[in-house]
Image (tube, rainbow, N blue to C red; front, side, top):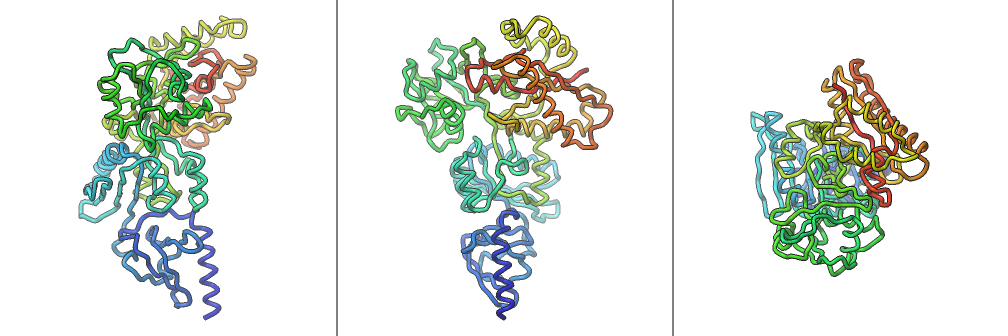
Length: 518
């Protein structure tokens, strides 16, 4: 008995250390009830709350932390013990109410129809929605439980094992990453666990009675930090993911803090109504939720104007474009979830995202005559470091191609692609595999900011374009057919999108664009 007890104890410790290797899919029972797990020889028993079951491994809370054990090697007593004969994967998602109530149900319903499945929806209470996917014979294949709350609460549910995934209107914060790692949930920002569902943007709005039609990022930052700009700032509540993204992307970048004098509103709809009826007020709202308020443009100190349009969001040329995230707690996922994540990259899924009021990442063509302002920027920036011959080279090469909205940008201070760009890269790889660009020339055009030596910037822009090309080739492997020509070109600081005196301006200028030949 002692020998077996020692073996079981070693397995317990080993399982606790490896718990992060298993995805914590919820058992289809009342997981709040504790269960008692006993070794198959009865040498040792543990009691804890069930926090996951994937059909093979049962995961419970224990004094060792999250503990995963092979289910057929233990006995389990309690109402929350799963029955392998009737088990099917159930995914618990928690987070932004807009994503949980609007976008995700629409995506799951369309996904079910694409797989010839039936999606049964049950509203259990005001915050919870359950969606069960069944085949033609009525067999349940998967269940999804959506908790409509806030991005903050979504991450809190994840680290307390109340959720398997987070629906987030912003990127995960450093403190949330640390907390997740402390409980064994690692790699939240890894490609397998961080997925972009679509795009949105924060748009400054004023009353239609106002004469102001543009504002700078620095003015916005000072306004919401308590500076005087002649406008009264409004924002949604503290827990709203987009309000938090506004703080993260604008205020913290400028090393400022949100002023206590900012008027807060419980939801974006009410905020928009107040702004539309209140001259002298300014608010930050979602791209698709301006309603009766008047959207205004963003202008920087160099005179570059960013207008919140569909194209500007897709290219992420608009400075306050925000990816919408699905963060998975673990890498291990059942087949139905892997199929769903793959389906999210299809045109059908992109259509659902658009109909839900968001912006999808599907590429659109941007004709040459829509490049006028960008070419004007290039001409204005010409000088000793950017001679006419270089602009002529740029125009000659680009006019033989059509720009797509797919754009690649990098994380601040690094060479890693940012989240939306990593998603763009996977989409491009899938399109090439599907033969979308067969017989055509794919041009990856690299650009840089204007700080420093022009020759060095030209070299950096080429390195970035080549890095995207190398990453694309790695994704494709042998799938990169010979009838697709992949070309890299570098233009340095020749086509600025923003002023280099701001973090966003420099980031916008450091990019790789996708151009396709006829």
